[in-house]
Length: 269
Ligand SMILES: Cc1cc2nc3c(=O)[nH]c(=O)nc-3n(C[C@H](O)[C@H](O)[C@H](O)COP(=O)(O)O)c2cc1C
Figure 1: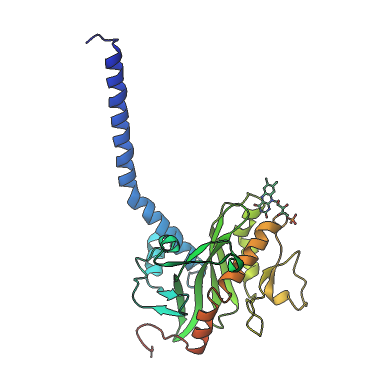
Figure 2: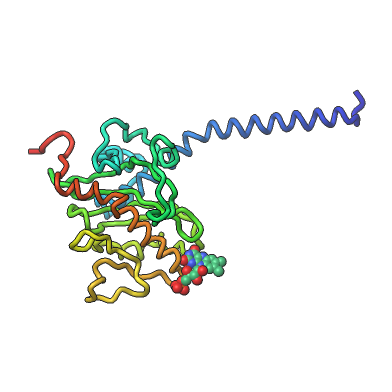
């Protein structure tokens, strides 16, 4: 074959393409377990941070973090029947898949869709932290559309199932310096001690329009506004109202209040 023939050039291009696609496929297959492990680790860190179980004086290494996460009491809740689901394995449950699976999810009527979700899973994982035989914290996932992106986070409640003990946003794509201030640690700290429901059980929590005014009737339900990010702040208020309202976790929280759960493994001495 002539060295400069067009068919030789085509063969070289095809061979190169074949080798490259082989290398890319191999990299995807080989790196997938590492990627999954990193995702798991990231999720563990985000949730464990809200449990109050991490030592404050030192950094927890990856291995220890995963071990601690494995020991958490994790359960699946059926949001619509307001109780625990015993059929679904919480270790293999995939929230994102469930959110769009027609069998596992429900459409949200537009007039109730405060978080702009369109659909949501009927099931959710929850994480329970125990102190002796008493429930100490309950950690619940929340999500909703912000100005540009889906905001995903976890809210931890104290044992009264009303006072917020912690909040984290682990995924968002709002504008850096504006909407992404929702991930800033010093702002998230301001959620601690705020209450979600008023004495009549109505969700009152909100991101304020400015700085919270201490001593006012709303102060215990409010967190300071984010400068230049009212749109994202309002979206956060709306997602909290959706998830803690009558079409979200509220019926489950009422049921849990009336029938406190038991620590797995029975009563500790
Ligand atoms: C390019 C661009 C990106 C913006 N990104 C955000 C954002 O991520 N979140 C947000 O709330 N506002 C964002 N804004 C600002 C909003 O349009 C709006 O002005 C702001 O939320 C009002 O907040 P303020 O009342 O605190 O000024 C952005 C504006 C521009 C021009």
